[in-house]
Every structure is written in C-alpha cells, then in structure tokens.
Image (cartoon, rainbow, N blue to C red; front, side, top):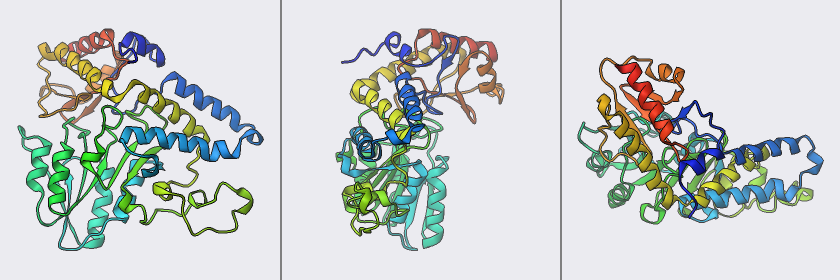
Length: 382
C-alpha cells in the first residue's frame, strides 16, 4: 500500500508552507506530476508534426477512459469523456422519458448544474419538479426515501451534498427507485475519487463527475457513466471521432453510420484534448495507484482531526451521515459574512456556504495545516 502520511504526500503538490489549503471541494490542486504532463503536452503542441495520430487522438483518450472507469468500478466501454458535469446531465435528460403525470426528484440547495437541466426537462414534458428538503436531524437518505412514490420517474441526486457534506445512501435509494420503476441520475463531482463506488449495487442510469475537484485534474474535462441499456440513445452532438473507423484519416469522408463501441458515442467533440488528457491521465493514475479503499479512511482521519481542533471554539458539524472527506462547520451567529476572505489573509483557504464553513482537506493536509486553520479561526471569532 502506498504511504499515506501527509509528510510523503505534501511534497507531491505545489503547496506553500505558509498556506493551509482546505478547499478541495472548490478545486483540487493538480499533483506536480500532472502539471508537468500538461506542460509537456503544451510544449509538444508547438510542433504538431510530431503528434502521433494514433497515440494523441485515440490511445491517450482510451487510457484516460480506462482510468476513469476504475473510479466508477466499471468497464471502459461504459464511460464517455465530457467537458463538464452539466454536459453529462444534459445527456441523461435527453435520453430519459418523462410524461406530464410524473415527477423528478432533486435535493434542496443542490448544485445548480443538477437543477437547471431538470427544470427545463420538467417544463418541456409537463412533469413536476419536486425539491426534497431534510429536517435538521434527518439524513438526506431518509428524506429521499420518504419522497419516492408512484409518480417518481427520475431522481437526480448527488452522492454528497455540496453545501453540507451529507451523504445519500445510493444503494438504499436505488432500491427504492427500482421498486417504482424510476431512473437514477447522479452528479458524483463531490464524491468520485474519495472512496470506492459500488456501481453493481447502485446501478445508476447515468452518473457524471467533473474532473477538477477530487479527481485533481484540469478544468473542462469530466467523465460520464452510461448504463449499457442507454448506449443506443441520442448524443448531444455528432462528432466525427466517435464514428466507427475514425482512426483512418484517409477515409473520413466515407461517412460512417455506425458509432464506436459502448458509451463513446456520447464523447464530446475534440475529446482528444491533448493539453487536458495528459494531466488528467496522470492525476487519475496517481489516485488509482493509492487505492480508493485506502483513501477514504485517511481522509476521515483528516476531517476528524480538524473537527477536534475547532471544537473548543464551538464550531461543529451537525450534518447527519456526513461524508468522510467533507466537513461543514456550523458558524455562530456572530461570525462575519466574509469569514472565508478573512481566513484567506491568514493563509487558510476554505469556502463559506451560508452559515457553514466548508472545510475539505486531502492527503496533503498535515498537522501544521490543521493548527494554522484552528488558530486563524480563533483569531477571527474570539
């Protein structure tokens, strides 16, 4: 098993010693090795005559697809390369039937990308968009299970709520949805890459993740799981590279009706993105090399240590079933509305979401970072 101590991990990232970066849910820092791979790709892009067609356009994206598939716990054929979570969610909405007497379930204060697309789908079909809220002592799982009913056609959910860190037990929810013949669409942006994903038990119809947060990759590249039963559906665009035989550039105008196998028909245009694929591949290889089964307990140790450090300041997390890698601390009424900005001036990077301070460390977070955070909070709140 790779060494998981922060003293071994931190040097792999370009993190100044005078900064406590506790904001991976906002944007994960790329490992130095991934940034170097991206720089090498940009350098090579200056000399396009040196790009190998098979490697640059096909082999590297396929290697990336394979690494992403490991995170989902599935096969490469079930993964599409997409530019954003919203793209994947729009693909799902295009390929799932809705009628006027049905409903779509979403969570209260869910991230906008997984709301707007369903508002539009509801407006187009006449279906009802139902927002599921939870009470203070209720888990998101219980709230969703109570909301599922005979009219439920689609549940569009995260695994981890971006604002409070609460986990949705997707196995239980998926079972409840299947009992009603309903579909499950997932935005895994705040969870994929932090723990194993049991796709065989959950069996989503579609599941997508942006690649720039917990997957530690570049912006504008994400990954979409498409269940085999939906792979003959309609893509958002008609790209040449997803057609059968696209590898043969000399025959591209012999237009092909057949698509490449599996979910590849849902790939975005210019999916080969040379300057993006290289760092994304390097980052995913690093994550998969660590092993997600090892990552989850290590991240829980980090968040528990942070919670312990600020408990004397009356900061606490009251989210039922919070994610191991996510800590959303309830702030006192006297906390300034610009607390995150003030902490940034003290060398602490976190996010403020309403009356909560979202603190999201990674393996590089060490005791020095935790002390810096606790001391900065103490200085601003006392």
